Amino acid sequence: MAMSESPVEDVGGAVLFGVDGTLMDTVYLHTVAWAEALRQRGRLVPAALVHRNIGMGTDALLDALLGTDRDRGGDAALSAAHDTLYAQYWSRVVPLPGAHDLVRACAVRGWQVVLASSATRGEAEVMVRALGAGDVIAAVATSADVPPGEPAPDVVRLALAKAGVPAERALFVGAAAWDGQAAAKAGVRCLGVLTGGWTRHELHEAGMDAVYDSPAELLARLDDSLLAAPPGWA
Image 1 (tube, rainbow, N blue to C red):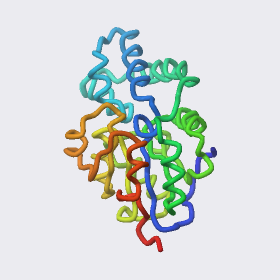
Image 2 (cartoon, rainbow, N blue to C red; image 1 turned 60 degrees about the vertical axis):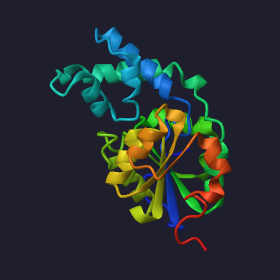
Image 3 (cartoon, rainbow, N blue to C red; image 1 turned 60 degrees about the horizontal axis):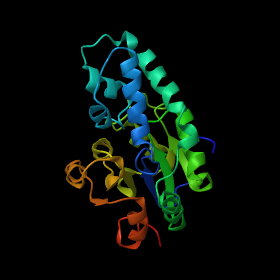
Image 4 (tube, rainbow, N blue to C red; image 1 turned 135 degrees about the vertical axis):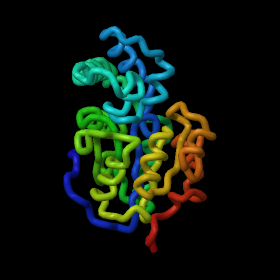
């Protein structure tokens, strides 16, 4: 799918999906890639701690793992190492159960579907192809567009701009506390799924209105959820 660079036609409301852990089973692949990239450069960070920061943009993730007072001269090399290591998994990137049908069901109900991710542009393209729903995805916002990444609300705001809707006519679906925090800062209500490895309590604490076990459960309960129909849908 080509990445959209301009707002799409406003058809009522937009659902903004996080990607890693929300639609794609990639959180732990990123965890291994970051842990190994750090190890190769002499920084031994427990994988469990790395996991707790997946979903942030690179700068924020490295701040959390290595401290804000670190020598930032090595950040570009660390990021490049992660990207190289993660690319080895691209052939194994798969959607979470129910994710493909969830995206299509939202589009059928009149939502514009926009992906909002701290992934690189290349990673996002791989995941869109693997998801197999590129024809119903209106736009994609990535870290290439807004380098700071989550939990700053920049990616969410860019996704809103690409959808051409105000915050009150959008919903965000994510899988990490950072998703809830970023959505809240942008004024967007948020739903959560547990497939990113966070607990239900943590996602509620991050501001998510409702939390589902998986994309498949959200799909099964779609008609009773905030995603039943977009605002203004007749």
